[in-house]
Image 1 (tube, rainbow, N blue to C red):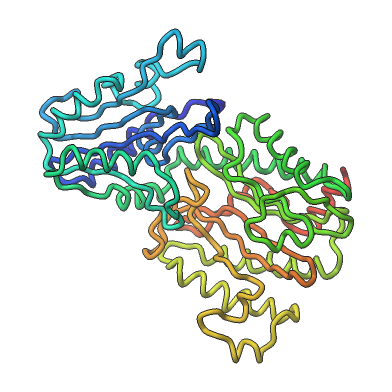
Image 2: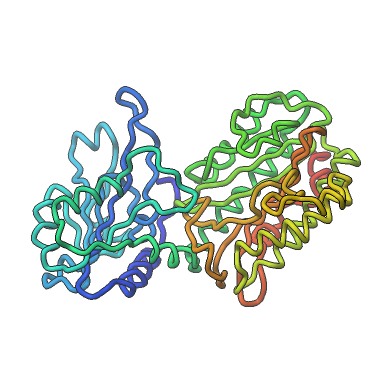
Length: 433
């Protein structure tokens, strides 16, 4: 790992919170993600299962965590099973956790090699009545391919069909959505690297550069600051491409007079930042571009003020669209009062130019888990990212900051470190390049 070691107290406290939610006489078993094959013998870059990492901090494949607080054998009340290294593995694949390193990273004292897991689990699980397993229950997830959690759940239910099984995901979603001080320090660090990336591309952008060259400037800055890399595939969209919400081709020329929308994030210590900025390729917004940009910025500022404990996320989305964005679109001449009057309530008039939600949970995953139909809480972390997309004018503008909820009002983590956002700040920064 490139990142600095994370205080194991984070994972110790996380496990305590989860175990406190378990039914009596229950065992919970969590597996690491697979190491996926690309083609031939090449593998994808490994990314750890988010629930697994949140509970133990182990950033390695072929790992299993067992939590069984009522186990009659103390060694199995909290334990890890890891891949045992060997001289061959060390030569070909590099370093793997030793038992002492795993103890230091996770705070778990009982570490076993995973070749004994099948034997160990068979005797221990029979002491339990209930089994907690986790699946990918992120409400944005669409099942397309096998994954470790699902395969393991099927195996365990086949081998032990008479136990009562419970979903760990609802517990973990509520727990993971409330960020600790240690987590916020990691996310703040990721955001500080994002700022450096944004400053780099403002200095680099000019007419004639390719979108992929801008993407390369970002990853250079991220890796130079010990980030693992992008927290998601970056969107680097110039001109009309910015009106494609999930544009990732990043293969067009940035032309004079175009705007450049960059939606990107940093993965640091398995925690994510998420930022969108729009800059003029030639360093100067046109009057129309400035008007649209400032309209989006006003909506973002007003929407941020609504991110407070007690707010219902789905109602918040409606308020941002119908009360904040609608007015800006009328003032820009993009929709009329007649269109609003005659709109389809299922697809309001404003959605022609602002068709996505304003905020999502942020944390270990860039689209992190959380209970979207429950009131927001202090220490929830959200993005705030309104946008206006005008294909007929070749203008697409989205502005995105990361907002921490508190009992004293929302904390904009990007404003906190002086991330440029105002038109004048961006133009001044680009004029110095």
